[in-house]
Image 1 (cartoon, rainbow, N blue to C red):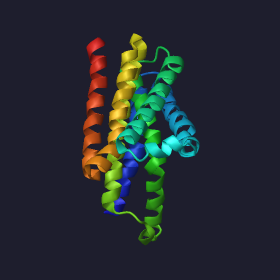
Image 2: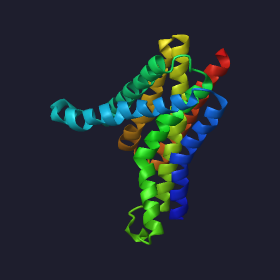
Image 3: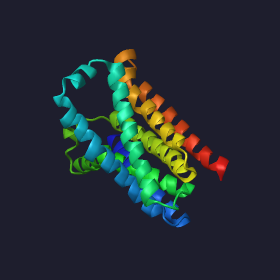
Image 4: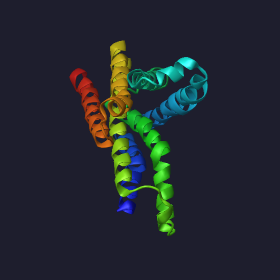
Length: 233
C-alpha cells in the first residue's frame, strides 16, 4: 500500500503538472513559457523571499513571538503574507514577461508551473526518495504510512487546482487591466492558508477536515477562474 501511495503521490507531483503543460503546449504557443514563469513565480516568492523572512528575519522581533501565541492573528498573518507574496509574484510575471500570452491555456499552464514546482519541492522529491528506499529493501526505515502519503498527495492535488484557478484570475485581471482580480486572488489565498492554523488550533479540526476545506476552496477558485474566461471571451 505504501508503494502504491508513493507512486500516486509522485504522479500528482511530477506527471500531472508536466504532462498537463505538455498538452497545453501542443494547443497554444507560449504555454511552455507560461509554465516556466509559473515555476519562477513560486520559487522567487516563497523559497527566496517569504520563507527567509518568516524563518530568519521576523523571529528576531518580539512582536512576532507574541503574534504566534494568537492562532487567529498568526493564521491570518501567514495566509495574508502567502497571498501577497505569491499572487503579486504571479501578477509581475504575467504583466511584464507574458505580454499577449494571456489565453486560458497560458493561465492554466502558469498555474501548473506554480503549483507543480511547489509540489515537487515540498513532497515530490521526498516521495521519489522513499520509493528508492522501498525498492532497495530499506522500507522499514520510512517513518510514514500509506495514509499519510495519500493525504499529502491529495493536499498537493488541491494546491495545484487552486494555483491554476488563482493564475487564471490574476491573468484575467492583467489582460482586462482590473486590479480587483488580483485582490480576489490574494483574498482566496488568505482563505486557503489561514484556516490551516485556525481550524486546528481554535476549533480542533483534524487533518481530514482541513484537507476537505482546502479541496472545496481549491475547486471553487478553479471554477471562478474558468468562469472569468468563459464570461468575457
